[in-house]
Image (cartoon, rainbow, N blue to C red; front, side, top):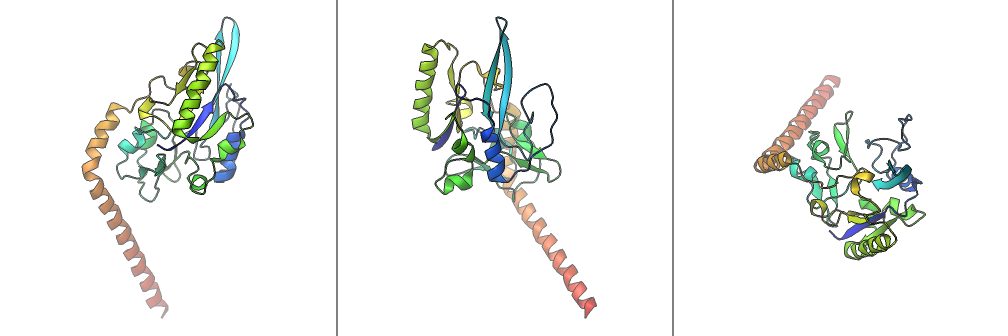
Length: 260
């Protein structure tokens, strides 16, 4: 994993600039939502919302504390979605992030069902999964991800993983020295390490993040079962496409013959 985004929650003000930038760059339409008792809006990931700010409240000693964090696909090194994908549609890019080849996707929904972070949305209309792409197109052209480019407080940084990991631990040390005893780095080793690193001021569950995310055991079993048959599945898909194209050509020829 070469490149990383570091989200420093101690600097996040929940302005949602990152959320808006993600929608604008990826041309994702706005969604009609309703108030559900929380300022978090929308309350869940959807095919049109790949990045969002999580709002969490925690009361301690009669004081209410807010916990904000930008959330989306973590691009895990040990990715459950890749493990369970029966066709190899989910793959790792040259930068180490996780991407989806929708031409190979068969709409099984295993990726969304097994993600330990629950950040993959599944569209029931198209039968396709959607998630943060780490702005592959921008990164390939020497730009930083859209969300990182607009953060007004510097809560989102983009760069080399080794450099940002060092910066994350330095920041945690300062927070602990300032009284944040539970401050920690999240994503350094979780699920093999993630492309989304966090500096947390408190424990992960306060941000809606799993304390010890794991690839489900059943996902590993399915992964081992699928590996031997992936080639057969791809062959079957290719044959289906060929048969469909042949049928379409025959129908077109018949129409042309009738016209003549």
